[in-house]
Structures are given as C-alpha cells and as structure tokens.
Length: 411
Image (tube, rainbow, N blue to C red):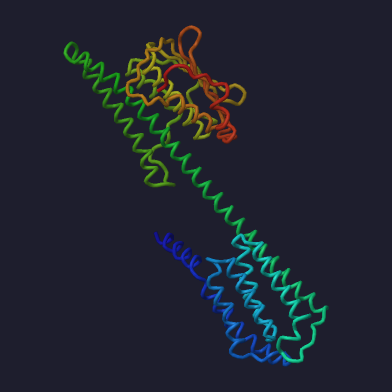
C-alpha cells in the first residue's frame, strides 16, 4: 500500500506542471544575462522589456507538457524578439533548448525542428540584413564565420532531444513488455489453478456421485453396503477438501512451501484404490514412481492419469481400465485404456477434461492423443519429455492442435 502511494505521488509530480525546472531556468536567465551584459558592452542594455522577455520564456515552459508544440513555437518567438531587441547573447537560449526537448520527447519532432529552423533563419536575417533598423544603434553585420557555432548549437539541441525521445520510447516499450509479461504470468497461474481445482474436484465428485447412487440403491435392501458407500464418500470428500485447501493455501501465501507435497506417480496406488471404491478396477503396467522426473512433470503425469480414470468412471460402461507407464527415448509415456462402450452420461462434468489434459501436457512440452479404439474402447496417450518443461512456447502452440483426435464427450 505504501509503495502504491509512493508511486502515485511520483506519477502526480511528474504529470503536473514543471514549476521547479521553469523557475530554475528563469533564475539562470536573469542572473546569467546580467553577467553577459557586462561582457558584451556593445549590445543593448537590459531594460524592463529585456527582463520581461527573459521571464516570458520560462513562464511558457510551465505549459510544455500539456502544450509542447505551442510552447516551443512561443519560446522561439520570444527568443527571436529578444534578438531583435539587440540584447546580449546568453542564457535566453536555455528556454529554447528545454522547449525543444519537451516537444521532441512528446513526439512532435517536426514542430520542434521547424521552430528552431525559423529561429535560426530569423537570427540570420537580423544579424546580416535587418541590423540597420534594429538596436543597438551603429551595429554592423555579424561575421558569417560566427554562424558555425550557432548551427552547431541548434544541431546539438536537436540531437540531444532525439536521444531523449528514443530513450523515453524504449523505456515505454520496456514497461509495456513487463506489463504484458506480468499479465501472461497471471493468466498462466490462473489457468494452472483452474486445472488443479478441476482435476481435484472432478475426480472426488465423480467418486462421490457413484457411491451416492450405490448408497441410495442399497439403502433399504443392503444397509451394510450403503454404509460402506457412505464411508467411501466421506473419505473421497476429505481427500478432495485436503487438496483444495492446499491449492487455496498456496494462493493465500504466495511463495510459501505447501504443507504437503504435490501428488505424483508414487500416489497412483491411492488413486487406484479410490477408483476401485467407485467400481472401477485399474491394472498397472510399468513402474509407478517419479524417479528422474521434475516435480512439475510428476504432478502433470499424475493429474493426467487421474483425469483419464475420472472420464472412464463418468463416460464409459466398462468397469476396468489399464494404465501403462513407459519411458521410451527420453519421453514419459502414459497410456490409459478402457473397453467401453461410452455411456454418454455426464454427471456434473464441466466438459473440459481432455482440454485440461492437453494443457497440462503442452505446459510440460508434451502432447496428448485421445480417441476411440477400433475395438470400441477409448484410449488416452500422453507423452511428456523427461527433461521437464521443455520448449513451453512451442509445446503450448502446437501440441494441442496437431495430431490429437478428440472424439466423444470429455469430462
């Protein structure tokens, strides 16, 4: 909160009228021109009109952020009037430099170049042709050799203004890129949390839904079996609530270590036991361990198997499923099969199961293939690189759209 207030105060001071810098330019112009008057005795003495012209430029600078084009034109006109008065050369050009810097920095480079060019053309006319009719009396033409420093000064002012403009634009691009990166990270985190909650709740509620149906059907004829179903509901709901609480704890205390480790392949036996309580017998081929896997890949593999089994419970008439885990060629391959047929039911499903599995796989640089088997069953095949989140950008862009077959309802 304090940082936000501090940022707001800095932004307000930066966006408000630049009184301090304008006042500093006014003081330097008044004092510096007084010294220049003693060093240039041939120029017209400063009177009240000269002092007013020296003050008028800094006064216009106060509006340079709101009206940069008008200010640079006005300041150059004031400086030209000062030169026409025959007053000493000096800090009057500080106002021109600052106005030009503000205009170019605001993106009005051509207006600034035009104003400075017209000021220089007016200076040429005064110094080489109009001096006869302008003060000081008896003044002669200025040497042409003296125009070199004037041109160099004008080019230096424009060059510095362009450098400042480029740096401001670069800073603005950097800020926009950082903001976009923050939004992307926030979106990815929201998507991750949504997937996690979906997988946890979908599996738990599917088990509860099946057991609630069993309990209702057997409540009168087989009370003991109904009590077993209620105990299964209690255990499944407790497990789901614990995992949801873990996700919410992570949200409440970002950066803090979770109280319990994230689930991985080593918890597949627990998952199979929960599936068995919902009437689904699962057989495993391959090792149910996460050795050699990064924590993110281990969690993704577990959630993919969990969601695939949840889909079997919801949408398949088969009461058996087979899970095969292998690691061919540096890839973790998960294959989940059921013998079908599809029931078409969707008890409470959100229709995003396969989508969530694809997103998880793509997030780790892998892919998902899902579709009906020729013999009437359904198969889900996930391939995850053992190296972890490899090439996330290419995986997220391509794996969800290439080579995947999505047929039928998903959970």
